[in-house]
Image 1 (cartoon, rainbow, N blue to C red):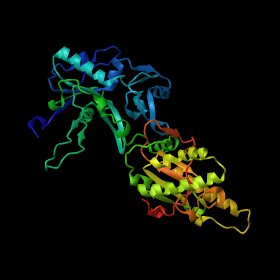
Image 2: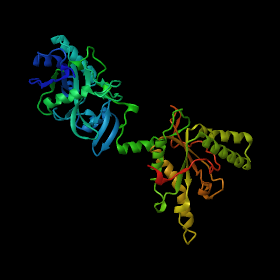
Image 3: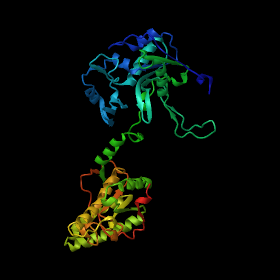
Image 4: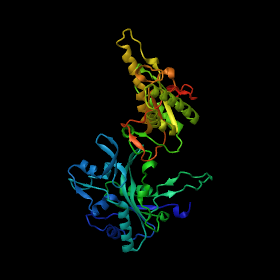
Length: 445
């Protein structure tokens, strides 16, 4: 480590007056600390930025103000809401603050914290002739951790991220994932001297000139994880609810491979579905090889065509119907649930035995729906049992296919249907020779 990085000093600026709408923060800071030098970093509490920009609003009902700033709810526990706000930040109450503001009012976060940071930086350059870094901070909670800390929500002239990927550590090991959130670390350092109730809204860090850039830079927006990079986009119960309500029937798939482990986790979820007498009246056959899928689908097609001809359908009608099942041939993965009647009871009186069987027949469908919570990009098709079993379901004697065939894969954008839409007619046939072993619940992890 170079001498430049061996240490730094951080202190709060006393004497900054109460900020009001229209105040020039750069001039207030310059008057309080005229001795700023190139390479200093200023940590500015977002609250005074909001006040200067007029982001104080009357709100007898704080919840209504939170609603107006919320883009989506991430998690809710009682009255507490963790939400994504209009600035793209995920935080409690959308950052709406009712402290240190007159009764009956609340403070909203700056409309564009990065733009606010740029304005303060430009103002200090014009007033004092110095190039400093600006970090606008706000208080956040954190997943997995108790307590609060300050993080960067706006920045200018600061290298907010220090990307060490491609380098090596002290032992020569390659660094493949290390990206340091420098701006957040600076914000936390400033919070140690500003405090939460000391009336010290600005702090200065000196000695870390390497963190200051010549240009304004990309800002704190670069710190926000979005979309597919966010592994914690929803709270636990919210994630389960969204997985069920936003499931789609997939009609076309990409060439991306399917993770077998993900499929097995989905099947493990499926076997938690409730069933009669605390049983698991299903087995899942996973068709992972193309050869096994083609052999099964060919047999299902042939059996279906034979049935349709017996029904008196024309060859044109038969071709049209069978063509609707071709979607299964493009799926990179098939899972076939099978009904197992071991747990059904035979009663002494004929009034109770048939309902027990019918309840057993419905359970694999519930299991399939449960699996969707772990794999929302799926679809299913159904047909009756080729042995003409009761209720038209596939039975253990036909082993390989029950009434439902689930297909898994990465969907192509725009080719989806809501779960309430009926999927394509499936195909039926014997699959006991599909070449794949049934996945039993006891063998899942």
